Length: 112
Image 1 (cartoon, rainbow, N blue to C red):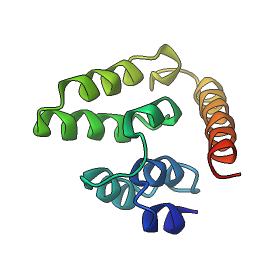
Image 2: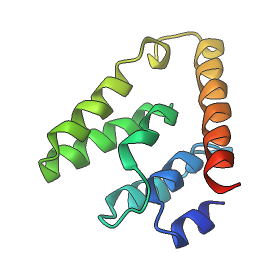
Image 3: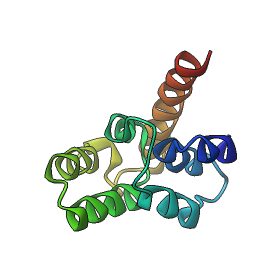
Image 4: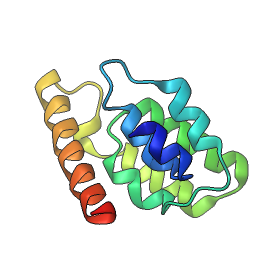
């Protein structure tokens, strides 16, 4: 799925899918998020990102590009209480599972 989304220039979807791997593939996610020609609604997928490192990278990228509105959306996503890294592991896992489910439902609606 990561390769297919990459070939379709759906780079934000690639970044979201990189979280699904046993070990988050940061290199692929960061490379995808650097792409300027994304054919997906980039910031509409931020609610599906549960990895704070990826959200922090998005904030950095948008700041560097001067994209204030998108940066604010990424900051809002980071600020969600359930993503706080000080939370117990089960809270973090529940947040990830909820986002995975919603993302896969969105992908099913989009492609099927």
